Length: 247
Ligand code: NAD
Image (cartoon, rainbow, N blue to C red; front, side, top):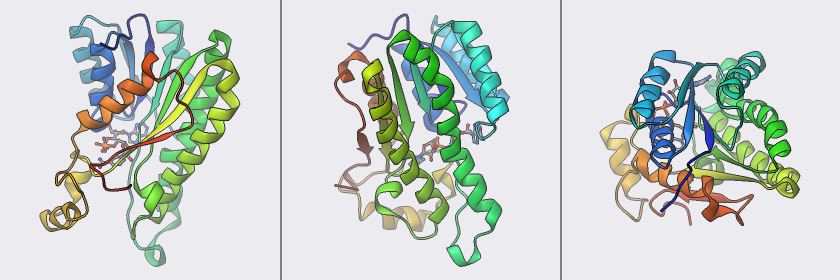
């Protein structure tokens, strides 16, 4: 049984989808959780559910691509919890299109929200975690960061970049007892993948040995493991949660 009692976790993009499931899973294991989202109402709803589990919760509105928002978010998080043991960089978006038609703003927005955000949040979390000589950082990447995907040059580059960031920070932080890992989900049923047509989903299933899309809980289980003491000798790794899509 995994226990995170006494730990404080911050989850970005925690208002819905995979991030919401991760926030609740960490809280059920005993952690107090800060839920960050650009959509405050969803963050507040998730925080309410966490409080109903008997845990401390904080809802924070922040655009994780903004250095000012991220600094303010850490200030209120550390004021409320006085420590940070677990950081989950989960917030992410897609703006798909073939490269020849992709606008600069679609490239910039995806890179900034999916990748720069992790740089900003890890920089803020680094100091208190180094002082405490411990911590767990989990970055939510994607299988397309490993294998590429036509129509997602911005998204796959952001997720591949997140994997490089993960491995570098694992090396920078190892001597301070801070583990940095990535989880690379395959196709998970959330509002993000609801955009896919039934035909697209059927085509995908042909490549997934387990013959189903994943659920947010499948990803949350991997995050819970990496956030726990069971993963104290694991750093710089990419754990795919994809039904066998990439192997
Ligand atoms: P989602 O769209 O359902 O949820 C994303 C959350 O992030 C939302 O609550 C949204 O409001 C928040 N968000 C968006 N921009 C933000 C910003 N600038 N600042 C703060 N919060 C912001 O997506 P999801 O499917 O739950 O995906 C979560 C993560 O998992 C993303 O990083 C995504 O790339 C990754 N992922 C998802 C899948 C999938 O199949 N769903 C597969 C691989 C990776």
